[in-house]
Length: 210
Image 1: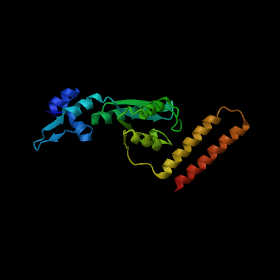
Image 2: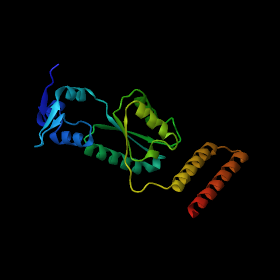
Image 3: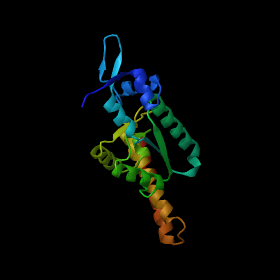
Image 4: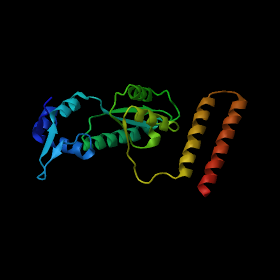
């Protein structure tokens, strides 16, 4: 089969995007020209353009907060993810959740996992690793790699230290157990909850001294 090549303007028209978007795709490695002359003229393989046009799988952005009170932070995460993808020229959709990072039954997370298992997304974008899950995110990343799904994590500022991450994990665990025990009128459960909180405070105070 004879291969046909077109310049960037015609390629952009075929895909229904702007020339600027084509250049962003080239910079990100999402869609690079078959050949580029010394003068900067780009030539695209029409067959590859047709395949790119037929690939409608989106970039999926996932954001999460632990409670409804953090609605403002959820909106901030979403805006950051959308702006990042727009700058890259990626067609994106956002899935959001409200709930603990230790809750594996959140609707948004289940929807995301279903899309990953069926290979229905092109890439997964997160503001931070722990926005996906407190524990178990590496397993999700492995599933993405098996399906050929790219993973992008936007790092904001310095990464937390081991002590800070451990303190956050301890707080998350205590919060989950406290929520499960809360509402029970049993003296035994109330004492257990108080003991958990006290031990958690001791661990966090010890970590902060290091």
